Image 1 (cartoon, rainbow, N blue to C red):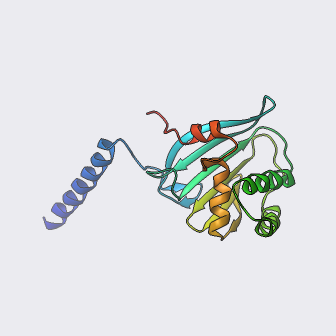
Image 2 (cartoon, rainbow, N blue to C red; image 1 turned 90 degrees about the horizontal axis):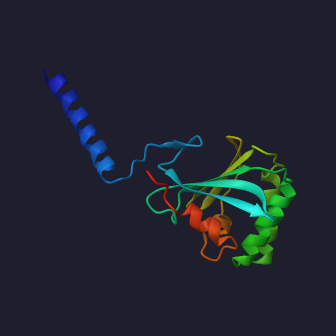
Length: 178
C-alpha cells in the first residue's frame, strides 16, 4: 500500500511539473542536444547568403535567454567550402568584434586543426558553454577550445549586436512560433 501511494505521489509530482512547464509556454524537452547534456530548445533559424547564393542555413538552440550560454548553433552547409576559408572568415569576423592579433593567431591555429572542408549537406555545430566552445561535424565531436574570450567572440559572429549579419542575428534570436 505504501509503495503504491509513493508511486502515485511521484507520478502526480511529475505531472504537475510538466503542466507547469506547458502552462508557461516553454517546454525544454530537448535534454540531449547533439549528444550533449544540454537543456536547450530550438530557437530561431536563418540563412547566410553571399552574392545571392545560399552558403548555409543556421539554427540556434538556446535556453530561456538566447543571449546567455549555453547555446548551440547548427550550420548546415549548402556549398563546398574549404576549412581554411571557414577559419579565415571566422578570424575576420572576430577581429571586427575586437579580438587582438596575437590572440587571433593562436585561435587560427586551433580552428585550422578543428574545421574540416565541408560539402552540401554537411553540418557543423558549435556549442557555447561558459568558458568553452565545442564543435561537432556531422554529429561527431571534432574539437574544443577552452577559452572564454574565444567562445564569446566566436559566437558573437552570429549573436553580438555588432555582427556584420544583423538580419541573420535577428532571425536566430526570434523564438520559433508554436
